[in-house]
Length: 149
Image 1: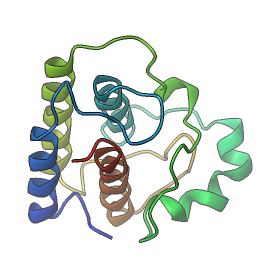
Image 2: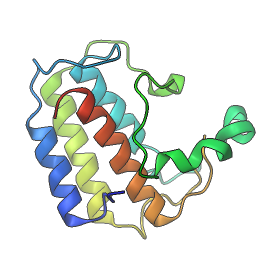
Image 3: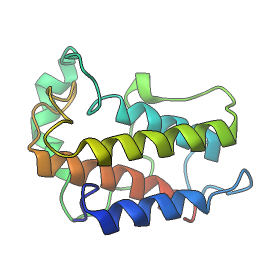
Image 4: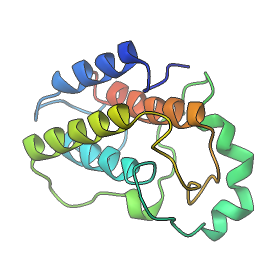
């Protein structure tokens, strides 16, 4: 599995994001490309947070059983359920979302593995630094494939 802390992987992801346009069409799911960018931004709030987030009841119950799927080599299935706070339903400005997501990816990469993921994930618990890099790559890759990038 690729790791977002790796320079080549970081550059690959940012290049793929740069190829998205407001006309990029989804291959599955309900989100528009702008909503997908906002959704991916929301995901970065977890490893970049400077505050501990409360663990969800569902996370405590089943998060440990599926955590390995976030950073292993198996691709994610299409139309997986999303945590309610990561569902984006309103219209978003494409250029703004794209710029802000790219800035968050830059921040994640530039902070490096020692300064991100300081607290457990609210759904899946503690990750190693390597697992943070792999899971963030895998999430972005899943959605970029969703929009043909």
